Image (tube, rainbow, N blue to C red; front, side, top):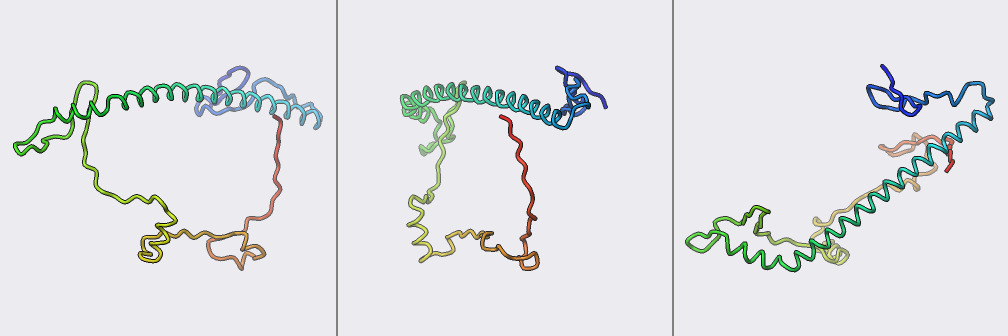
Length: 180
């Protein structure tokens, strides 16, 4: 297993994972306080760089969203202006059977297709509260109910008193290290 060096840092040749600093920024002769301060300073530097890179990425993504928005606005305008005419033309170009029904439902040109499809009738819920109230009374099988456990109501129980499918997670100490 080998490592390669990039800007004073070691990276694993096989996995590409970070393997540590090649430069001896920690010599081993530091007092516990100096070591703690060195680690915190290095951590702050790395976190600041990480935040900066995330900010750059966010800016790039935001700029791309703006560009996409402009293209979407142009497409929306084009569709509003010409879709009805395009659909009428495409329909007029489709071959028909002797009885006048369509042989095919897709018009094709070098730049794309216009496809016509029959969409089956379906039900859409527009006022869920009203629909659920009606269905509970007249068609209860049509109502989906979700059950969950209120863990706060299980407090004070011991491991032997817990319902099946639950467990106690022992208390622990939480540590947060913050620099930036």
